[in-house]
Length: 426
Image 1 (cartoon, rainbow, N blue to C red):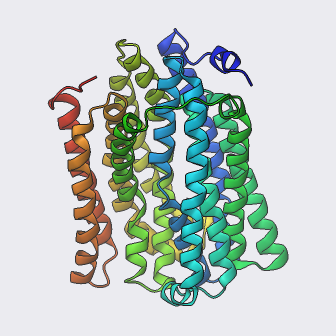
Image 2: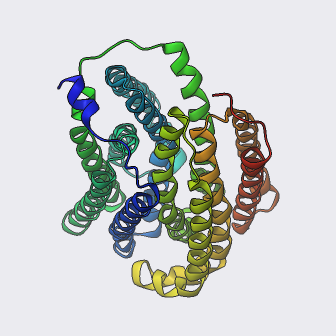
């Protein structure tokens, strides 16, 4: 399509507060629906062994290790910025290069898995190579989904971003239920459901953004782009590392039966964070656009307050209704152990949710001096967590206490650079 058509699509509504609440409200509704649909996969744990369920949770966390958050925010930032400054042809080339490079990265990972397949299966206790390869297919979709979702987010096409999320959840649960119940697919069937859901989401985002990546391309300044992309990848990557890696660390210290309850607590607690993420997701491109136009925006305070209220109330609600939810969705045997972990897990998500809002604001305003302390904190967490698990054997809650402490430190770092640190050089 022509550049003129791509540029004619509106990217900003000039009724900021009304638009913000409408768009973030819709994304919250979509996220809740998608979350319930995705949660609908977990009752299948009643149909498989605890060891198989722990394999599914681990494979799910493996797909979550893909830097989806930084990848999406990079393309959201670039889309919002290029459309605000009428450089959609450069955006077309960026999207195509991103598409190609993510496939190359995936191909390298697939080659590595092929070479060390038996060792990987033994280390993670996998019973079928098919589980590993379906997980790899899901990894590819989990690379493309955030790339093109970032494009939709950057152009503020939140309507279809929400629908992609909903359809993803429906596809995930429908395919998983079919394979597990009809074909006794176990963990492989549940992972295949994740692949189907991610594939549906990626497909919708690719189709909805086709006018941008099909536009006539134009060369861009790669060095300038790298200076913007590298801090975004590192900053959001540090947040995602804190959000996703604890399960993989803990699995190395506990058997599959014990990991099942940890996986349940993690699933419920992460749902808390997904509930509040839409607020920051809507805020981010608006602040990028405002910064590109040298306009002022006061969304940060609104989003921070809303996130705090929702996160605290959600954590309290989880602790109250947790036993009922675990009985309804998972096995009743998981209730006691899950409830020992759930308050710690949910509590650890609150500072991470608030830090995520501040990170979105810092990155949107190009306050990149916060990135180095964030990365150093993530590295310190990567070494501290296994040390603590080794020092206190048999105590899963130690992992969550460590996670909560580091999330509080992340919040402190982000708060310092947001309110007291040096100003961005725009």
